Length: 204
Image 1 (tube, one colour):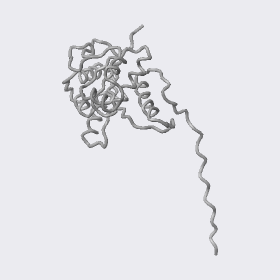
Image 2 (cartoon, helix red, strand yellow):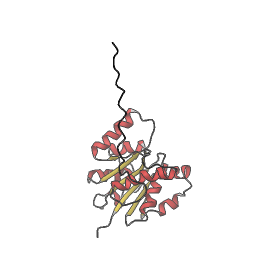
Image 3 (spheres, helix red, strand yellow):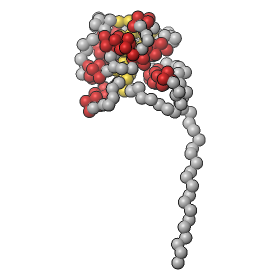
């Protein structure tokens, strides 16, 4: 049976908990995960969560040094199903769009694009200026899936964890990984038609 492999990149944008949760869920599957953390990503784990970086790394099957461009995931000959950058900072997005492979995270994303593999990006910034929007458009043109962590309400979330899980579930959907992280929309009865206006008779 072919080994399932997914590369997970965590960059320095706010929202590193999405990447941590993705690793946490994948650790309970048969998917082999290859993690690459940028230095700002490591710092944000400390700033934004109660996780220790070492504990996050233990969730992955393999951890790669962000400076090691000789790592397995730097080559297209190393077969994977693709990569998710969760979250994706604007600096990382810019590097990916312009093939500026200054580190292993950018290089691994470039490999996913050139090999026509799935590349899922969770860009995290608000508000967005035109430069940010143009970068996302260019990434989409190159073949990446732009999946910003936007809150959905159709599954009626009541906790932050449920909000996180819905976005992580969408990432897993992109790679065809089965999960039960949130309640999927199954349709609803149509709304009743609005009442007809009363007929007014003009008086002579």
